[in-house]
Length: 173
Ligand SMILES: [Zn+2]
Image (cartoon, rainbow, N blue to C red; front, side):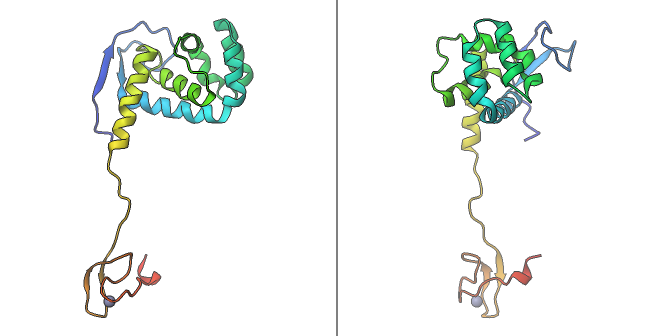
C-alpha cells in the first residue's frame, strides 16, 4: 500500500485553505483523496441526521459555517475550513436528494480538499473504490497438517482431509 505513489494530478495552488504543507506545491494523491473521503463518509454516517438537514437549509457560506458549528460537532473543526467548498458542492445541480446519496456525494467531493474540483475528486474516489473492490482477498484458508492416520498435506475445512480428525485447539498457539 505504502508503495503506491502515483500522483494522479499535480496541481499548484494558492494556499488559501489552512494546511500543514504550507509553501509546498500541493499534490493530490489518489489514495489520500480516497482515504479522506472514506473518513468523511464515516463521520457523515454519525452526524448526517442533524447535519444534513441543517446544511440543506444554508443559503450562504456563512450559514454553512453556522450549520457546521451547530450540528457538525465534534467534527466542526474538520469541516469549518471546508465551508466554502461544501457550499459549492451543495449547489451543484447533481447534488442528490436522498440523504444516503448526499453523504457519499459530499464526502467524495471533499476528499481532494478543493485542490482539484469536487467533480474530479469524486472521479478519483470512484476510481480508487473500484480498484479497491477488484483487489483479491483471502476468503478461506486451510492448514498444512500431519495426521496420525498417515495423511500429510492441506487440511479440509480445518480437519484431516483423509479421516476428518479436527485440528486440536492445543496446536494453535
Ligand atoms: Zn487423518
